Each structure stands twice: as C-alpha cells, then as structure tokens.
Amino acid sequence: MDSMLNILNTLGPLLSLIGTYCFILSYSKSHEIEHTINKGKVAEGEVIKMREDPDHSPSDMDYHGVAPVVEFRTVNGLFQHFSTTYRKKSPYKVGQTVKIYYYHYKSRMEMALEDDEPGTLPKTLLKWGIIFCAIGYPILFSKLGGLF
Image (spheres, one colour):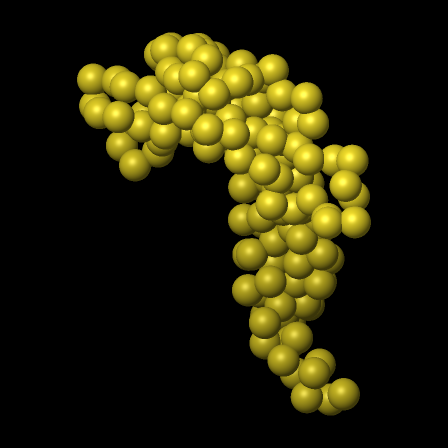
C-alpha cells in the first residue's frame, strides 16, 4: 500500500498534465465535425462501400448499424472518408454521390459528411480527463504548497 502511494505521489503531476490534455482533446473532438463543415471546402464524393459497426454485439441481432466509406478527389489527390456514424437504416447506398466537406491544413486532415456525429470519443476523453485531474491536481498542489 505504501509503495502505491509513493507511485501516485510521483506520477501526480504527470496525471494532471494528461488529464488536462484529455480535456483539450475532448473539446476539440466534440467540435471537429462542426469546424470541418463551417471552415472546410466542399467536394463531391461517391459511397464505395458500407461498413458494419465493429462494436455491435453478436447477441443484438436486431442492430446492424452501417456507415459509409466515401471516396472523393481534390486538387491534392484522391481521399477516402470512413464515417463513424453507424445507423441501422442508413440514408446512403453504394454508388450514391454525396457532398463531403474537407479541411486540410498542414498535417491536419478533417473530413465529414453533413450528418456525421462526433460519437463517444469526446465523452470518453472527458471522463478520463476528470479522473486523471481528480487524482493528479491535489498531489501537484500539495507538492507546490511544500515549496513555499
């Protein structure tokens, strides 16, 4: 038990940094699609296939959500967007032409369909950020308090 407290005491400042980073990523990912649609350029793409939801459980036979894979061309080349918005009754069909938004800036490449949703990643990052900050910041403040 004592060694666990020593490890936490050592890793506290690092956990607070990781937690803060999780908060920033959570905010960024929750607004990424909105940002892409507002600031991005528009291209016409074609749905080349429909992917099944990899997270659906085999016991839930009624749910077979699918999401489109869209291929589109810009002046920078040919790109594919793998949507993560899985729906049981998808409005997309293979071969359908769709409007896709893209935002490419340096190494940042964002793509989105009009009806894409952020998914569960922002909420998961927020939860981990809260946990890491709740553990790390009290340890960090106690160490900083010892300096004065």
